[in-house]
Image (cartoon, rainbow, N blue to C red; front, side, top):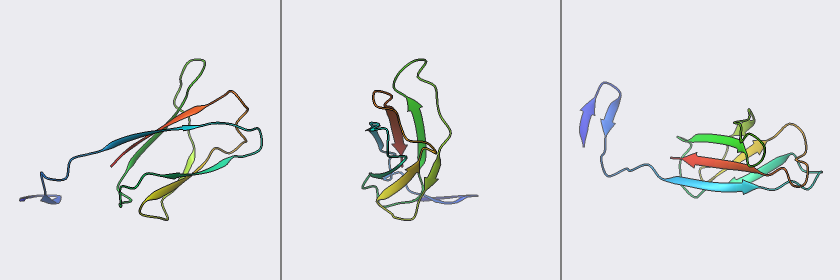
Length: 88
């Protein structure tokens, strides 16, 4: 463990990447994603898994240490799936 101007750095804490697929049913717009990383210090990205595979802006709730809540705003149309990447 070493000190930096941002606090302690622990090289044993390596970032872990997890990927999830949100599949639309035409009704649901809020999804709970369990990542199991035991932290709120996460980078979360959501992108289309169709068309141009663009990144989309969503509301993300970090209330729990092992899961996040993703609010897509509108229900996902069946067949328009989205990829969630979580790094923590």
